[in-house]
Image (tube, rainbow over all chains, first blue to last red; front, side, top):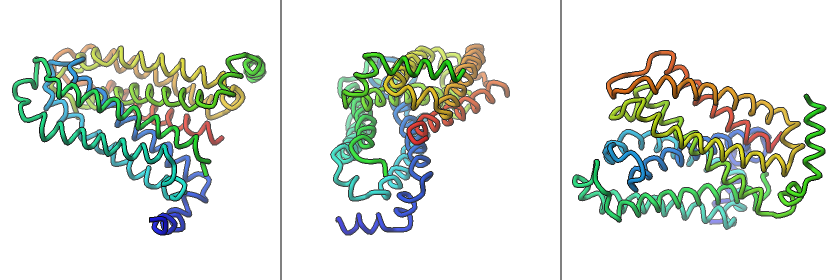
Length: 164
Length: 161
């Protein structure tokens, strides 16, 4: 694994990300734009899922209309995040906050899959103008909590290792 | 203007709050995290409103319904942004107040708030789902997103300039 990280770090991309003084802040700015878009839109969908707002908008319709933009933003966050990683692969890989951030993103994915494949089975009964079952509220609450922590650990990465 | 900002910077550096932010290690990253979370609320909501204005998402609801639903959320986010931002300034007044990128960010922020107010007004008049925004409101929506992107970029670059 360490050999792979060293190879990434000494690759042309890794070298560029570490050596060019504009590369890191520029990609980091794009990363912040993408992750704030992901979090901001997902929280709106989650608040609907919990039943705290907009219960007249069908959950399935809101997910279909808002999630494509969220996925595009998430993809940008992944690509820019990977580029930031290449600047110092070994240091990131050993950083506690970085590891927590990746684990939390995996947890968010798992939470989403459980909701999609299990909880959503009976959604026809509570899609619109109806009380949402506890499992759906839990999925929405977990999603908000996990994404807040993703942002927090992301910010902590920058404070627990030198920027370059 | 710069003399005044330098005076303010010198005074802020003598405050007890400045010393606290400087010396308690976790304060700066914690406040920055809150700042980013608030940006997410403001930027994400603006994005949804812009997509609705352009007819690209959320068309089950009238534009007025969306703006009514998200307006308070955005205003709350802006208040949290101003408070957390103010605390970061007290912590490092020299690196922010006298920094060109910071000054540009504040200028863009004033513009964004004006554009946001205009867009919300325009959306508020469209109270049926089948109604779509005219060219002016659509333009405001696009400009608003570009302004937020520029503001986020400036915010990140303050740390490097």
